[in-house]
Length: 130
Image (tube, rainbow, N blue to C red):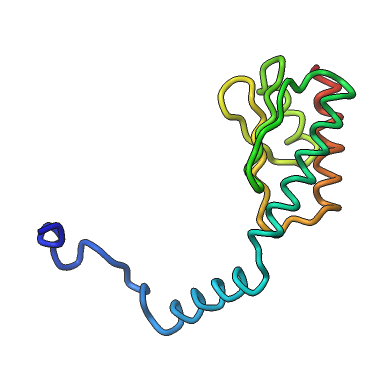
């Protein structure tokens, strides 16, 4: 019944399901599974949240830190917009979630040294606008 609404040519893609695309999908899944990417994301996310909590203790601009894996939010005492702008000017792309939450969504393969650089930029940005 559900499939009856799909008319030929309305669901699919030109290159979907070809041998090349299938081999790329398999290689991606193999990398994720063999590399246990989810475990790495959990460890690195905790590292980032711990770093944000250290910044929180040092300056008080961060009210709360929360997250799961590498999807992380830092609730600020003020508006997040100026912090997002200051981070971007320093070379770090971050997002907002509402008016007061700084959202971090790094790639699953981010390394601790890259996290350290991001945390330093965030700390400087918070100091400038906080």
